[in-house]
Amino acid sequence: MKLLPTIVLPLALAACGSTTNRPAPATSATAAASAAPVAFGSLDAAIAGAHRPAADRARDEFRHPRETLTFFGVQPGQTVIELSPGGGWYTAILAPLLHDSGTLVAAIPSATGTRARYHTRFRDFLATRPDLYGNVRVSTLEPPATIELGPDASADAVLTFRSLHGWITDNAAEAVFSAIFRVLKPGGVLGLVEHRANPGADPQASARTGYVPEAYVIQLATAAGFVLDERSEVNANPRDTKDYAEGVWSLPPTLRQGDTERARFVAIGESDRMTLRFRRPAAAP
Image 1 (cartoon, rainbow, N blue to C red):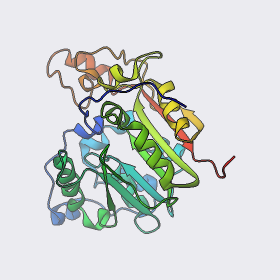
Image 2 (image 1 turned 45 degrees about the vertical axis):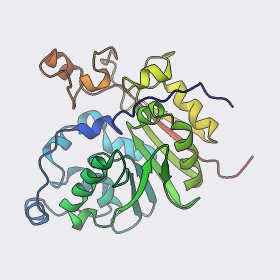
Image 3 (image 1 turned 60 degrees about the vertical axis):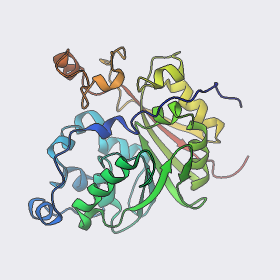
Protein backbone atom coordinates (compact mmCIF):
# COMPACT_ATOMS: atom_id res chain seq x y z
CA MET A 1 0.00 0.00 0.00
CA LYS A 2 1.57 3.29 -1.04
CA LEU A 3 1.41 6.05 1.58
CA LEU A 4 1.10 9.74 0.92
CA PRO A 5 4.38 11.29 -0.27
CA THR A 6 6.60 12.69 2.43
CA ILE A 7 9.23 15.39 2.53
CA VAL A 8 12.11 15.93 4.90
CA LEU A 9 11.46 18.67 7.41
CA PRO A 10 13.06 19.49 10.76
CA LEU A 11 12.03 17.21 13.58
CA ALA A 12 9.58 18.73 15.98
CA LEU A 13 9.97 18.05 19.66
CA ALA A 14 9.78 14.33 20.24
CA ALA A 15 6.73 14.80 22.40
CA CYS A 16 4.84 17.98 22.91
CA GLY A 17 4.24 17.09 26.54
CA SER A 18 8.00 16.82 27.06
CA THR A 19 8.20 20.61 27.34
CA THR A 20 6.36 20.68 30.67
CA ASN A 21 8.15 23.00 33.05
CA ARG A 22 9.66 20.59 35.55
CA PRO A 23 11.44 21.60 38.75
CA ALA A 24 15.19 21.10 38.73
CA PRO A 25 15.97 17.46 39.50
CA ALA A 26 16.33 16.79 43.18
CA THR A 27 19.10 14.61 44.50
CA SER A 28 18.16 11.00 45.09
CA ALA A 29 18.33 11.45 48.85
CA THR A 30 16.15 14.56 48.82
CA ALA A 31 13.56 13.01 46.53
CA ALA A 32 13.42 9.78 48.51
CA ALA A 33 12.95 11.66 51.75
CA SER A 34 10.15 13.87 50.43
CA ALA A 35 8.13 11.22 48.58
CA ALA A 36 5.85 8.66 50.13
CA PRO A 37 6.59 5.00 49.34
CA VAL A 38 5.04 3.79 46.10
CA ALA A 39 3.34 0.41 45.98
CA PHE A 40 5.06 -1.36 43.10
CA GLY A 41 2.62 -2.97 40.71
CA SER A 42 -0.23 -0.60 41.53
CA LEU A 43 -1.36 1.82 38.81
CA ASP A 44 -3.40 3.93 41.21
CA ALA A 45 -0.49 4.20 43.67
CA ALA A 46 1.91 5.19 40.89
CA ILE A 47 -0.42 7.93 39.66
CA ALA A 48 -1.08 9.26 43.16
CA GLY A 49 2.53 8.96 44.32
CA ALA A 50 4.30 11.97 45.82
CA HIS A 51 7.31 11.18 43.62
CA ARG A 52 5.47 12.87 40.74
CA PRO A 53 6.05 16.66 40.64
CA ALA A 54 3.00 18.86 41.15
CA ALA A 55 3.39 20.19 37.59
CA ASP A 56 3.08 16.64 36.28
CA ARG A 57 0.09 15.75 38.41
CA ALA A 58 -1.65 18.95 37.24
CA ARG A 59 -1.69 17.45 33.73
CA ASP A 60 -3.67 14.37 34.82
CA GLU A 61 -6.99 16.07 34.14
CA PHE A 62 -6.01 16.44 30.48
CA ARG A 63 -4.01 13.23 29.94
CA HIS A 64 -6.12 10.75 31.92
CA PRO A 65 -3.27 8.33 32.65
CA ARG A 66 -5.35 5.75 34.49
CA GLU A 67 -7.99 5.52 31.77
CA THR A 68 -5.42 5.65 28.96
CA LEU A 69 -3.13 2.93 30.29
CA THR A 70 -6.11 0.76 31.18
CA PHE A 71 -7.43 1.18 27.64
CA PHE A 72 -4.05 0.06 26.29
CA GLY A 73 -4.14 -2.97 28.60
CA VAL A 74 -0.84 -2.21 30.35
CA GLN A 75 -0.32 -4.32 33.47
CA PRO A 76 2.42 -5.84 35.62
CA GLY A 77 4.31 -8.74 34.09
CA GLN A 78 4.47 -7.22 30.64
CA THR A 79 7.42 -5.97 28.62
CA VAL A 80 6.48 -2.41 27.65
CA ILE A 81 8.43 -0.04 25.39
CA GLU A 82 7.81 3.68 25.75
CA LEU A 83 8.91 5.66 22.70
CA SER A 84 10.36 9.17 23.10
CA PRO A 85 9.50 9.58 26.80
CA GLY A 86 10.65 13.21 26.89
CA GLY A 87 11.07 14.32 30.48
CA GLY A 88 9.54 11.14 31.91
CA TRP A 89 5.91 12.15 32.46
CA TYR A 90 4.54 8.68 31.71
CA THR A 91 7.72 6.91 32.81
CA ALA A 92 7.07 8.08 36.38
CA ILE A 93 3.87 6.03 36.27
CA LEU A 94 5.00 3.07 34.20
CA ALA A 95 8.26 2.40 36.06
CA PRO A 96 6.69 1.74 39.48
CA LEU A 97 3.91 -0.26 37.84
CA LEU A 98 6.42 -2.63 36.18
CA HIS A 99 9.21 -2.39 38.76
CA ASP A 100 8.87 -5.80 40.41
CA SER A 101 7.04 -7.67 37.67
CA GLY A 102 7.66 -6.78 34.07
CA THR A 103 10.11 -4.68 32.08
CA LEU A 104 9.98 -1.06 30.96
CA VAL A 105 12.19 -0.02 28.05
CA ALA A 106 12.56 3.68 27.22
CA ALA A 107 13.57 4.38 23.62
CA ILE A 108 15.43 7.71 23.62
CA PRO A 109 17.90 9.62 21.40
CA SER A 110 21.57 8.71 21.51
CA ALA A 111 24.07 10.46 23.77
CA THR A 112 26.11 11.73 20.83
CA GLY A 113 23.59 12.69 18.14
CA THR A 114 21.88 15.97 17.36
CA ARG A 115 19.27 15.30 20.04
CA ALA A 116 21.72 14.40 22.78
CA ARG A 117 20.13 16.96 25.10
CA TYR A 118 16.99 14.81 25.26
CA HIS A 119 19.12 11.79 26.12
CA THR A 120 20.76 13.74 28.94
CA ARG A 121 17.46 15.08 30.17
CA PHE A 122 15.92 11.64 30.45
CA ARG A 123 19.02 10.14 32.09
CA ASP A 124 18.94 12.97 34.63
CA PHE A 125 15.30 12.17 35.31
CA LEU A 126 16.08 8.49 35.93
CA ALA A 127 18.84 9.48 38.35
CA THR A 128 16.43 11.41 40.58
CA ARG A 129 14.89 8.20 41.94
CA PRO A 130 16.99 5.09 41.37
CA ASP A 131 14.70 3.24 43.78
CA LEU A 132 11.82 3.78 41.35
CA TYR A 133 13.51 4.13 37.97
CA GLY A 134 16.60 1.97 38.39
CA ASN A 135 15.01 -0.96 36.55
CA VAL A 136 14.18 1.05 33.42
CA ARG A 137 16.15 -0.17 30.41
CA VAL A 138 17.20 2.27 27.69
CA SER A 139 17.34 1.72 23.94
CA THR A 140 18.02 4.12 21.07
CA LEU A 141 15.35 5.81 18.98
CA GLU A 142 16.81 8.46 16.72
CA PRO A 143 14.92 8.09 13.45
CA PRO A 144 15.53 7.73 10.66
CA ALA A 145 19.19 6.82 11.33
CA THR A 146 18.81 4.58 14.40
CA ILE A 147 15.74 2.65 15.53
CA GLU A 148 16.73 0.04 18.12
CA LEU A 149 13.68 -1.07 20.06
CA GLY A 150 14.71 -4.60 21.01
CA PRO A 151 14.67 -8.18 19.72
CA ASP A 152 11.91 -9.18 17.34
CA ALA A 153 8.68 -10.36 19.01
CA SER A 154 9.91 -9.40 22.49
CA ALA A 155 7.40 -6.75 23.66
CA ASP A 156 3.83 -7.03 24.86
CA ALA A 157 3.09 -3.35 24.29
CA VAL A 158 4.66 -0.31 22.64
CA LEU A 159 3.38 3.09 23.75
CA THR A 160 3.82 6.47 22.12
CA PHE A 161 2.45 9.72 23.50
CA ARG A 162 2.38 12.82 21.27
CA SER A 163 5.44 11.79 19.25
CA LEU A 164 4.15 10.81 15.82
CA HIS A 165 4.18 14.32 14.32
CA GLY A 166 7.95 14.38 14.80
CA TRP A 167 8.45 11.12 12.91
CA ILE A 168 6.37 12.47 10.04
CA THR A 169 8.30 15.72 9.73
CA ASP A 170 11.53 13.74 9.88
CA ASN A 171 10.37 11.43 7.07
CA ALA A 172 10.66 8.44 9.40
CA ALA A 173 7.09 7.41 10.29
CA GLU A 174 6.96 4.35 8.05
CA ALA A 175 10.29 3.06 9.38
CA VAL A 176 9.23 3.55 13.00
CA PHE A 177 5.90 1.77 12.51
CA SER A 178 7.69 -1.14 10.83
CA ALA A 179 10.14 -1.38 13.75
CA ILE A 180 7.26 -1.33 16.25
CA PHE A 181 5.55 -4.14 14.38
CA ARG A 182 8.70 -6.27 14.46
CA VAL A 183 9.41 -5.81 18.16
CA LEU A 184 5.87 -6.68 19.25
CA LYS A 185 4.86 -10.24 19.99
CA PRO A 186 2.00 -11.63 17.89
CA GLY A 187 -1.11 -10.23 19.54
CA GLY A 188 0.91 -7.36 21.06
CA VAL A 189 -0.49 -3.83 21.36
CA LEU A 190 0.58 -0.48 19.95
CA GLY A 191 -0.99 2.23 22.11
CA LEU A 192 -0.89 5.64 20.45
CA VAL A 193 -1.90 9.09 21.66
CA GLU A 194 -1.43 12.01 19.25
CA HIS A 195 -2.65 15.56 18.68
CA ARG A 196 -5.54 15.21 16.22
CA ALA A 197 -5.73 17.38 13.10
CA ASN A 198 -9.01 18.21 11.43
CA PRO A 199 -10.27 15.54 9.00
CA GLY A 200 -8.81 15.97 5.54
CA ALA A 201 -5.79 17.99 6.70
CA ASP A 202 -2.55 17.46 4.79
CA PRO A 203 -0.40 15.22 7.01
CA GLN A 204 2.90 16.94 6.22
CA ALA A 205 1.59 20.45 6.74
CA SER A 206 -0.40 19.62 9.86
CA ALA A 207 2.46 17.65 11.43
CA ARG A 208 4.55 20.81 11.37
CA THR A 209 1.99 22.33 13.75
CA GLY A 210 2.00 19.21 15.94
CA TYR A 211 -1.29 17.76 14.68
CA VAL A 212 -1.88 14.65 12.55
CA PRO A 213 -5.10 13.48 10.82
CA GLU A 214 -6.47 10.36 12.47
CA ALA A 215 -7.15 8.66 9.13
CA TYR A 216 -3.49 9.07 8.18
CA VAL A 217 -2.34 7.49 11.43
CA ILE A 218 -4.55 4.48 10.76
CA GLN A 219 -3.18 4.33 7.21
CA LEU A 220 0.41 4.28 8.48
CA ALA A 221 -0.33 1.58 11.05
CA THR A 222 -2.29 -0.71 8.74
CA ALA A 223 0.38 -0.38 6.04
CA ALA A 224 2.88 -1.72 8.60
CA GLY A 225 0.64 -4.73 9.28
CA PHE A 226 -1.37 -3.58 12.31
CA VAL A 227 -5.09 -3.99 12.86
CA LEU A 228 -7.04 -1.17 14.49
CA ASP A 229 -8.39 -2.76 17.67
CA GLU A 230 -10.34 0.13 19.19
CA ARG A 231 -10.52 3.92 19.48
CA SER A 232 -11.15 5.95 22.62
CA GLU A 233 -12.19 9.57 23.06
CA VAL A 234 -10.82 9.76 26.60
CA ASN A 235 -8.26 12.41 25.55
CA ALA A 236 -10.54 14.37 23.20
CA ASN A 237 -10.94 18.12 23.66
CA PRO A 238 -13.62 19.80 21.50
CA ARG A 239 -12.45 23.25 22.67
CA ASP A 240 -9.24 22.88 20.66
CA THR A 241 -9.64 24.88 17.42
CA LYS A 242 -6.20 23.81 16.07
CA ASP A 243 -5.50 27.13 14.34
CA TYR A 244 -2.85 28.81 16.47
CA ALA A 245 0.19 30.82 15.43
CA GLU A 246 2.55 28.42 17.23
CA GLY A 247 0.59 25.28 16.51
CA VAL A 248 -0.18 22.90 19.34
CA TRP A 249 2.62 24.49 21.36
CA SER A 250 0.43 27.57 21.85
CA LEU A 251 -1.63 25.47 24.27
CA PRO A 252 -0.68 24.25 27.76
CA PRO A 253 1.66 23.09 29.01
CA THR A 254 4.06 24.87 26.60
CA LEU A 255 2.19 28.17 26.12
CA ARG A 256 4.78 29.24 23.56
CA GLN A 257 3.02 32.54 22.83
CA GLY A 258 3.74 33.77 26.33
CA ASP A 259 1.23 36.35 27.51
CA THR A 260 -0.42 36.63 24.09
CA GLU A 261 -3.94 35.19 24.51
CA ARG A 262 -2.69 33.23 27.49
CA ALA A 263 -6.05 33.20 29.26
CA ARG A 264 -7.71 31.84 26.11
CA PHE A 265 -5.20 29.03 25.75
CA VAL A 266 -5.36 28.09 29.41
CA ALA A 267 -9.16 27.94 29.15
CA ILE A 268 -8.89 25.62 26.15
CA GLY A 269 -6.54 23.28 28.00
CA GLU A 270 -4.34 20.69 26.34
CA SER A 271 -4.90 19.57 22.75
CA ASP A 272 -7.59 17.40 21.23
CA ARG A 273 -6.04 13.93 21.00
CA MET A 274 -6.81 10.65 19.35
CA THR A 275 -6.25 7.55 21.48
CA LEU A 276 -5.87 4.44 19.35
CA ARG A 277 -5.16 0.81 20.19
CA PHE A 278 -3.62 -1.23 17.39
CA ARG A 279 -2.74 -4.89 17.56
CA ARG A 280 -0.19 -7.02 15.74
CA PRO A 281 -2.23 -9.97 14.42
CA ALA A 282 -1.77 -13.13 16.46
CA ALA A 283 -1.04 -15.08 13.29
CA ALA A 284 -0.38 -14.33 9.65
CA PRO A 285 -3.51 -14.50 7.51
